[in-house]
Image 1 (cartoon, one colour):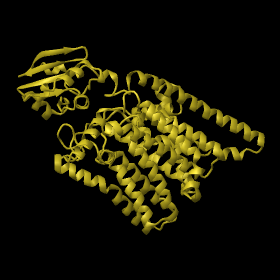
Image 2 (image 1 turned 120 degrees about the vertical axis):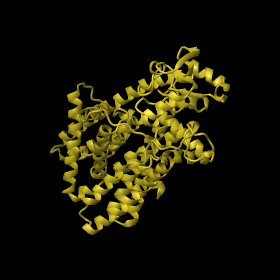
Image 3 (image 1 turned 45 degrees about the horizontal axis):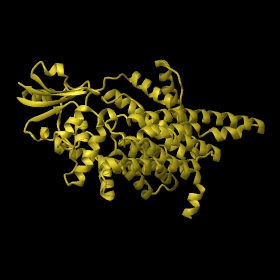
Image 4 (image 1 turned 90 degrees about the vertical axis):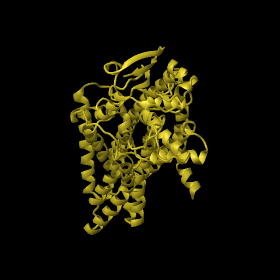
Length: 501
């Protein structure tokens, strides 16, 4: 039976193998892509293996991010007995391949489907620069997207049975997703919305199922936040208020959607229209499904519900709280739903054509659009891969960091870190990743207590990088206002200073 299943999905298996190979190619030169977030996850997973709990490289408990992803990385390290930095390309390649295969499974069960439609969508997913970017990096989004796809499969199972067991299983996956990224609360909201509008449930069962699903869904993260509070008297660490207007975040979202579908247009108004139009169309699609019960209990409806909730969450939360500008990374979990939903009616429209000739014309037109998107994706990937094979994936695994003069000096002078002096830097994740030593991060100027503590330090060293400076951290100019700064070593890409009061 299993053999027949894989035989039926041979196209999905081939696409999965290609996807895995692509991630291997993108990570071949310099390894997996590393960002500051990646360093936090890496250090915690290593700490778990060494028996020191959920502790970051700084020596403090991890509170800025949920715990499940570093726990997952630690589990992989335990099973493979290999450091996560070394095994990450294979791990990410396998997760990407799994997502491609599961997408093929979903497409097989769409209300309207044909083999040509399924295979074109599989190729688009496999060559998607959006997903390739994510799975070339050591980011929690890699696990988040996989769990989101699994959730859609499991919630459809619940729709078919409406049993408590199927609901609990879907809720457990939602709980893991929520504790992978706080944006995972969108899966819980999606499930609750779908239960609320389910016409096959009485109001009493709706209430019971919502309580069961919601309480299990938030359980892991609630325990996580309680632990954070007892560790640091803060549930998610220090957060800054948003500084980006709602209209700008809508525009940024539209820009990302345009990139996904290779729309080569510019203009604030155009991007805002794209974002609003997509949301309105998807809302109309969902409302229509509520009134057509056969459409309501489909994979497509679960996907459109998740897309609406997720994108609204990202746009609103980015307006309220400050984090990076809305980009592909933040919206990547919405890529598969928007691809599925924006194309799932194509086989139906072809069947509606009154004449065979019109059907062939429509088929040729749809195929042409697919080929254009695939060709654009291929060109983008070729250009990105060419750059990566010369310099590495942008981030701390890039040559500009790995071959840095100041990094090379730090790697050869361990005695610098063995002194009793406190060492500050404007890139502590880079120092940890490239030298395996932990140092203190310069404080962000908005946190007055940390700035005051830094000012009161009578003597310390400062390792200063000229690369990718964080504008929120204290600058050299600001430091010179209240400390004596003496340069003891100079490099083309930074310097080492002694700071005295």
